[in-house]
Length: 568
Picture 1 (cartoon, rainbow, N blue to C red):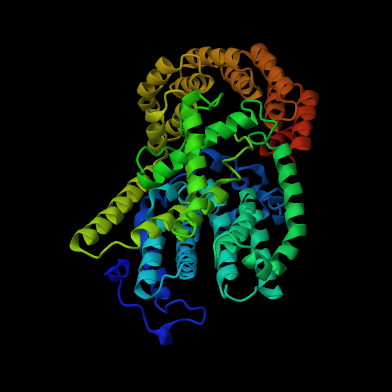
Picture 2 (picture 1 turned 45 degrees about the horizontal axis):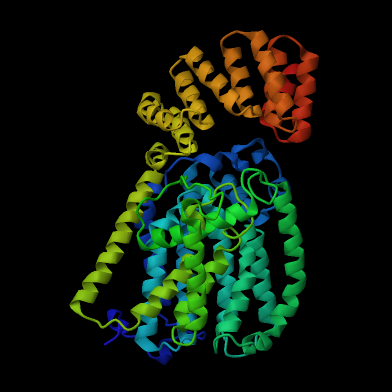
């Protein structure tokens, strides 16, 4: 008896849908909604956190017309935030609920994708049905998905995955026959929506090509020739997409070849380690963090990068060599790498390891698991083992969502794991201030400063906690120390505003003028300087700075309010 015995008998042909899926797929989706709702319930009322506060609904642009929301590089994503804001304002529940609905939908689409791919691999009947159910369940309940679901800003990953999976389902449906022009247009339309949600969805082009190369026979061009229509239509889109991605990377501050903190080859060495770290997290999901402390490999020897590069090369070579013997596993490995390529190859990104990047690539690892679990005999021990794995994943997912429901806890967890990166301590300080638990952050910051006495973020974190406690002189001391470590516009804004609170107007003006000089295109710096001019009675200077801020950010609420006060 094989893997299929773990599922109820597959309905006969008369109970299948027109696309070959069992009619019970509808009930599976309803079950996914119930399970997802139970596991993610603790996070549904979680507050906005970290990058959430940089999204349009938390900025002055929230009161603008829809056109202003969708004028950036991710219009489809921003449209969903616009809809959320118009339905629920600043209440995070509606945002979390939509994220959960997207995730449940994705789990259903993963079932369909697995059902089709297992069919291409020759799996039939109950075995095929059971493997698709278990794979989709693992996708639904895996704790690594929580960052893409419980983190409002993580929607970019899950929503892009929704359009990618939908496009892939259309592509795989009726795969034995050549794709029609009509179906090609539907696939490309969904592909465009995915890229307009997040740029890394461009990997779908590689997924379609890889599928045609691997099926029905491994590494042949028969599938590519059969589906030539979609590739003819895709060429102009790929060219336009590449130009668009280049433009986005040229403007981005945290990604691209212009990133000063890391060179492209150093990032490649680092990502070889990160890919293996992703595999480990997927297999043994312990040690999760909202902000991983993952150091950069400056040379191929540092942090064992050379061994990771060699291991990946051996794995890819093995996938090519054993492609006929283990077609599903080999395809899964290559699919995993293709889906990770936009973020884990040679284009540097400020954060080398981020859990939400694994949201869709985990599909490749599920296929590998299917290959090697396909011959498992159905025994009481096997039943117990599978049940235990699912229960452990569910418990970890629920526990992770409990942390997402309390931002100070998710940051405390990250700070406990961080020994070289100060940003988790700053995130903890901000969340503790928001929760009015300033003193609770002190033991963490004491540990952080002992480990990283010259870290910019730790010093700023101390300043926020001391200001919360009313200890302004101590806060100022740490801000000035941070400014000596990294003189940025943001830190001088904090210094200037703190001086203003202390009634030291001359020092405040000096600091804010320096902030504007360091950040000439920082609307917040000009708004802060305008506020200072306003406080000392210099209306002309205040108006000048407020107008400069509005020229940089037409929806700056601070600048608009300042100009209104001056006119009054």
